[in-house]
Image (cartoon, rainbow, N blue to C red; front, side, top):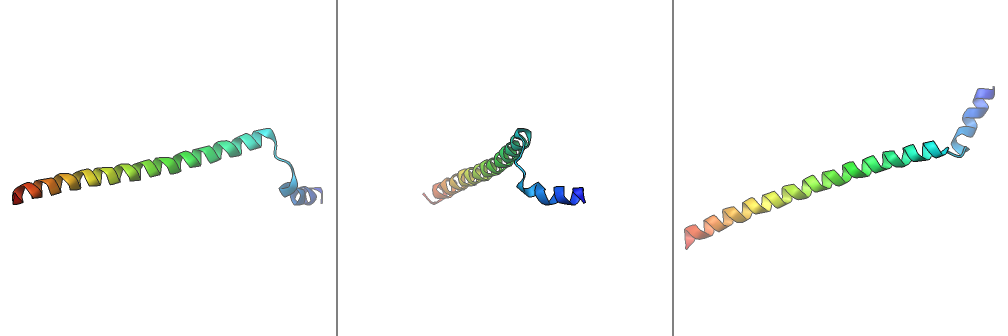
Length: 64
């Protein structure tokens, strides 16, 4: 019976400093991963546009 009462109180207990640090660290890792994905996407857009500019410049020279 005591375990059941502890389980019911669990969502309302105040987290320990270590639990708070662990949660913050986990959030920081997730944010970093999201930012890295954004960087990869932006780099691919830049590379795409560089290739496009080169292709269009070459085509323009063909028509001159």
